Every structure is written in structure tokens, then in C-alpha cells.
Length: 259
Ligand code: NAP
Image (cartoon, rainbow, N blue to C red; front, top):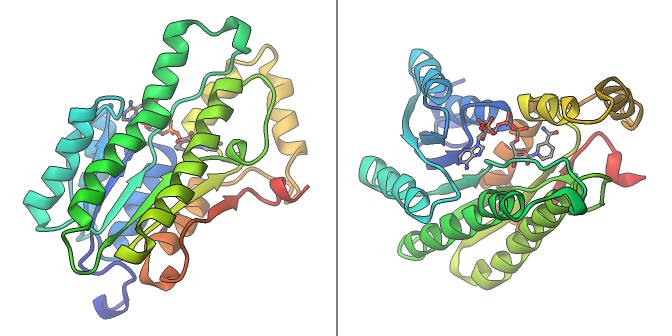
């Protein structure tokens, strides 16, 4: 495709959790569409492999090790984007972890860690990104990976559900606060997507075989989603094609939340 037709040509973007799953697929897709990327993860080798794949395909990306539960790491990844590319057009807060435990089995440490990664990380990153985007004449775009569990509850994961509900409402609240100042904010709500996280989650269930069967049976479209299908929706939400879309929580869930 000629560069002039690429959806994110020249845009500078940060993606968290870019070494695996939905973040990895989004990094590859955004780069193919002309974005210049800062990719972050806690797994250096995996994210570095994504950077190399993008470079080999003629794209632009670099890696910054960032644990999104740390305020300083969130700020540094964004500062690197501005230092390297001169601006920050897109922040995609995608990194997240699960906690497949009943609340009665969840320790203080479990709860603190889950909320630090899934909720405080996006808060820290968004706060720093918004300060930069407000100084840009054309603002910017924030996207958070929430989940269908931010829209409808599921069993055995109350802390995770609470965290994703918080992310959905964060996106909506920020969308309202900054709509008039050129910053769009949305949430992506994946359903059951075949990624390493899902495999880890299913394998932690008391009966993993039954869990996989239930996942498949629960899908109106009759199959699990792919990271690439989430990346396609993420691309649209951060692109100028979605210029009148802000404050939405978009399910990418094969019809799951329609039931
Ligand atoms: P994934 O394959 O595990 O990829 C997420 C990446 O983020 C992993 O490399 C992960 O490392 C990393 N990460 C974990 N904690 C981090 C931290 N503190 N700082 C930086 N990076 C960190 O997961 P995924 O399925 O693509 O999930 C991406 C997002 O989608 C998450 O927010 C998740 O909650 C959401 N989601 C996924 C599904 C699904 O069915 N897969 C459904 C709904 C929502 P580790 O492997 O060490 O954790």
C-alpha cells in the first residue's frame, strides 16, 4: 500500500504489553500502517523480537522496558516517544494481568498487584500522556484495553472484573474531560481471545479441559477471537477514521456481550 494511504502515517505511538498477544499484534499492525512506535513490556526478549520484525518489514520501532505498575516507567516510555519522534499521538495502554481466584482466596498482595498493573498503570500513563497531548495543536488519542469483563461479569475473577470495569469508566470519564481539547479516549473490550494470557488463565482453572470447552461453547461466532482481530479494532479506534468516536467501550467479542 502506498504510504499516503496508510492510516497511521507519521503518527508516534506507545503500546504497553507489546511483546505478546494483542499488544504484539497491534504493534505489527500499527507499524504496517505507518506509525512510529515505542513498544514496552516486562519481557525484553519478546518485545525486542517484535521491534526486529517491524524493522525487517521497513517500519520504525524501539523497545523500552517498562513495568506499568510503576509510575516512573509509564512516564519514561512516554518521554522516550517524545524524545525520539518529537510528539505523542497515540497511547495504547494494553498490558494487563489476570487473577483467576475467588475474592476469598485473593491475598492483599494479589489485589494490590492486579490493581497496580490493570488500573494504576493506565492512570499514570494517561495522566502523563494527556499533559503532553494538551500541548500539541492536534491533541492525541488514548486507547485502553479493558475486557468484556468490564461490561459483563464472569465467575472466578472478581478482582479482574473490577479492574476492567474501572478501565471502561476511566476511558469514558477522560473522554468527557478532554473531548473539547482534541483528545479522544476509548476502551477496547476483547472477548475470549486466543493469547498466551488466555492459555495461562485456562490452565489455572480447576479443570482446564472443561474451561476450554466452555470458552468455545460460549462464543456466538463459534470460535475464539484472535489477537489480529483485536488489533484491527484497535487500529480503527486510534486512527483518524474514528475521528468522531470517543468515550466508547467497543466489544470485540464474537457477540458474547450481545447475549
Ligand atoms: P498477553 O499475551 O499476556 O500479553 C500481555 C503482555 O503484557 C505480556 O507480555 C505480559 O507479560 C505483559 N505484562 C504483564 N504485566 C505487565 C506489566 N506490569 N508491565 C508491562 N507489561 C506487562 O495478554 P493478552 O491476552 O494479549 O492481553 C492484553 C490485554 O488484553 C490485557 O489487558 C488483558 O487483560 C486484555 N484482555 C485479554 C483477553 C484474552 O482473552 N486474551 C480478554 C479480554 C481482555 P506476562 O506474560 O509476564 O504477564
